[in-house]
Length: 287
Image (cartoon, rainbow, N blue to C red):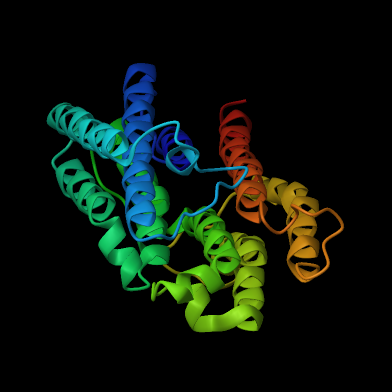
């Protein structure tokens, strides 16, 4: 979603000429690197006894479908492929992509280390949020801008929400293995408050980006009014909140267990609406 969003911003706001080839290339590279980071994380969790039972949304190693060695080698191969692909894109676009891509690659490779120090939330916020959008902008325009970084914050918060939902569910098992996460530090009640900020905060931030620059002149241009479309994702956020509040007595047994997967679906909806808002603004400008 950050790549799609950053690309749309580059064309509509940045005035870039849309390159379908570069867009697909950037998307494929992002997917490969994202898969590599997730696979490496699975190996880490399995080795440290964190993944002892499969969940409906993960558990290939625990189920015995793949060995931890196979997954590790697969992750290494994907990191290598994604790294080479990123270098080639940077070579034909802009120098700043070397910095963005290099930082993203380092965060992905050392995600398990960052995760052990309760920095997993920051890692996914950067890698699967801000850096993805910034990189997509550079791929299309050839130059760096802070605009996609700032405007992607709401979407990046929802990426944190996905990870937090997973860590919140695993507070007890993580504690047994002395693994530190933000959820573990906050505890159950604090995690509920944090989750609320992560799923409802994006709506408030988008509203601020729409209204704030129009009321107070500053360096940041106002978000187009078309971003009001994201309100259509509010029922989805309210559904997630209901699951979180009823975690001790869920309506359906798996509601809280698969909250991370449900949050990922919400992120998809919010991201698509954000991209649609940019594209609609483009049609209105050029129509």
